[in-house]
Image (cartoon, rainbow, N blue to C red):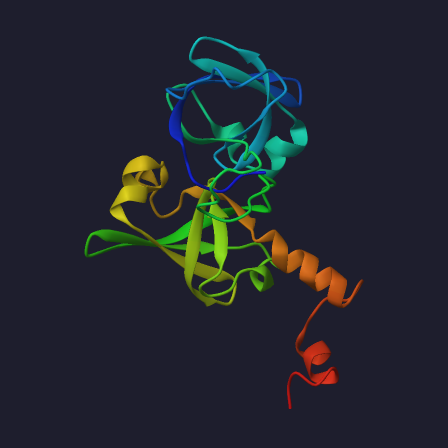
Length: 211
């Protein structure tokens, strides 16, 4: 589990295909004295398991499933990635609860400079927009962000200068793709309230929430 607060921008040393899977090697400036083989690291929002450790690098086995659900398979040597170590009990939760389980790869459909910030618009896959709400939380390439607004299958976030400087998002432009993880709390609430069907307008009306 993670918080979505990026700790370092790592650099891809290489991505080696191994059949349908891949081996990813990343260099980092993070202190690795508390990292062990088998630990979890979020790499641009995808939870990966450390398989080997160097002085300032680690490698990860990336499964075919992860390659198909994230942008990791598109990485090449020299690319930058957002890194976060796994959350420990008692750590400060500065973002929100992030699992590192990417829901979809979404395109950037809008990038607008506004004062000192950048406003991004992203498109979600069908069926995921219900888990993203205005002023709620969403994870984009591993970054915990507050949703400014939602319009159908599209949502908008505001990137302040600090986030732009400390993450890879400022390097992204319209047409690029990012890893998106919606807030897990909404999924649990939906299942607990109405197993099998989900919460929709008919459900709310039937149970007295709407007139």
